Length: 193
Image (cartoon, rainbow, N blue to C red; front, side):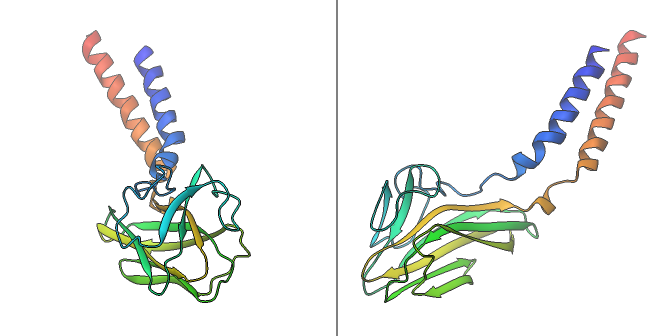
């Protein structure tokens, strides 16, 4: 009876916790919480990681740190590669804050394909979420290019995570739990008799 109870508890825990486990961010330091650009490649000239108020921004969207992007005369870049499941559906998202400085530009890409681009982007200085659904190839790269001659564009909480539709349905976990219970019953009978 103890084995059966234990397996029921494990099955229910898997059912409740699995979506959260699958929703993890595949990026390293996506929120810049290491206080630097660890995990990021690219030409980071004119870009910094800061905490607290900076320029017109009151602070990070979440956490303590965020990136400020302001190279002059030429675009800077940030990029990061990560492993996905080929054909899997992923959400690529980030928070951007900008005030429409002229000239400025910002572009976000998935595997070199532009998903968002703006000249003199303007979110009124407030953090705005941008979110896109993309398909994994097995090994993917996100990238940003940016320029802000007179000042800064802010970026925070960059994330790539499997879409909920990519998470096994609860019925799959119930089926797994039923199989575990059946196995427990078989083992119990085997050792009793």
